[in-house]
Length: 379
Image 1 (cartoon, helix red, strand yellow):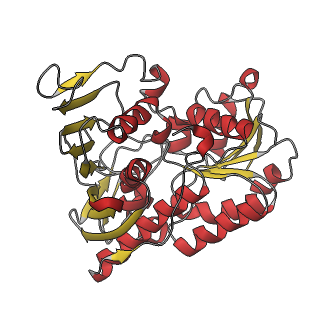
Image 2 (cartoon, rainbow, N blue to C red):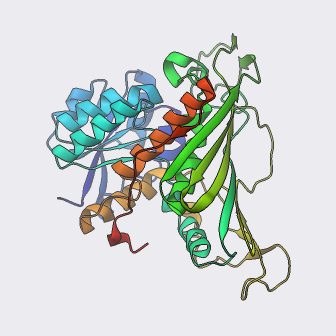
């Protein structure tokens, strides 16, 4: 398979504008944005100004019929992902999608099987597993730097789509028909689920509790021309805590909500028999407290020197497009399943699905899917 990525990008809203399109187009490096698609003319016009050489269209079929395009990047609102992924796979295109593939486990499983039958790649955000510092922390945990790890905590939350300026209206995140009954799970909790599974392997059991914490929201920070502020009554649950059991008795909690206006920067914490590791979602540092050498010096909680492991400036901001494209390019060249590939992504969707069902019924859910990272990655 050709390791040159010729990308057709579908959905040119906020996530494309702030996280994907900038610095992605790099023909000399074998990564080309060859097509742009959105039903909103102003978004299409903006994206075309960034990559004038790309074919611009409001119809996905135009990109699917283009034999020069071998990857489709799906960057639309989350409930629109699955039908676009299916159509792209049916047309013989490899697919990378923003999180998640689907919120319906059976639908996601069908898409995974379709990609397998057609011998195509299917990969999904979130991409932080690809950050060098994350792999370094994973290696620390698995090497026993803080002893036998049996507990972890993740704060995968923010103040909500109404709390910060956005280029486009993200009010859809508070509507069940567009973002599920518990939208923080697929939007934010997925970061925690993905990281924990990357470290500990497949989850075995899940339980969850969810509430409506903020029943009214006002959207007044959208910067799109002509936008008019509005207030909505919230019916979806915006506050959720998920408990997860992994093999060997490892227990973890993931807080996923749209009500955390401020919290400590260390979003990820791992607790072992000999110490603790903490790290932010983004940022060039890791904190450790350990009783074991060499990490017991200096004593107490301290920052590790990761200046040669942080990946540089590209991994410190929201620069997901070039990062994921480079990973997919490498996977194709090696003939390997991406770390964020179909079976890993399907397992994460099962966690989300189980958490939603548990929050609805109060019952703990047993999980069935498993995954293994491709040995070609050497991890």
